[in-house]
Image (cartoon, rainbow, N blue to C red; front, side, top):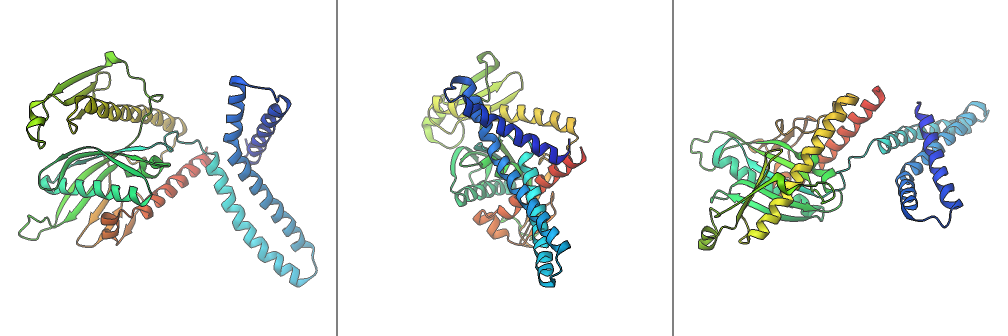
Length: 359
């Protein structure tokens, strides 16, 4: 089906739904809900189609004027207007194709962020803590709420691992490309010879699962309670408040011990488990869809080294899009990640558009 014919079909469908609703003013129940939902989902695309068709008409009219006028001034003005309209037409078509792409159902969700120290010992743990704080600042920059779910610290300011929940509008759509291995290059404070060390931490961004997204059978869970370890005083070490939940079919395990209450730790552990399961299921579905349509868009595989933070040179490099910014203080200390994130979103859109053109 040609692009223009596809647009015609969408307009016809939109009109047909409108007519159904108009001709049945007393319609109610499930049919009414489904039709109004379908109409709502088409509204944005229809608006873009009408804007695109309007530019097409304006271009055609201006071109006719350019080709048929004997007035040099009018011809010159028409030529300039055609140039502007052509640029608008290209942009409008791109926006329209993006609107027609299948939506990622997780984009509108909140996100759970999990950061773990990788290779590099204490320096990796310190870097993991810096990354966690960097995303907290990024969330604050976007007026999102950041709730700390769990932190396992090293006692010297580093984090072995840390988990947070970021709540706001379209959080996952912005952060989903941050999953992967983040590498730091710098001279550690403990290094006496001044040599630059390379350490790493992993970042995982999971869409927060809602109860309707994931159904967990009680028989599929093994729940263990035990005494919490680490800082927290006598109470933490003498009460079986820590909780470990294992999802037996997948082997996914979540451990939570930050709260003194076993009930609260269990609730937090279940929240994280649901999101990991949702992400697991989603990854399987995405892999199947990608294979079916030969869509080779990179998804930020967590085994990939995605970004390097080089402190001696003051630079941050994203290896997926070959973008380097010499703004390491702004990125790390102020959470100014938008240049990277916007570029990653644009690259993903371009890859998806290219894939649809090849089909």
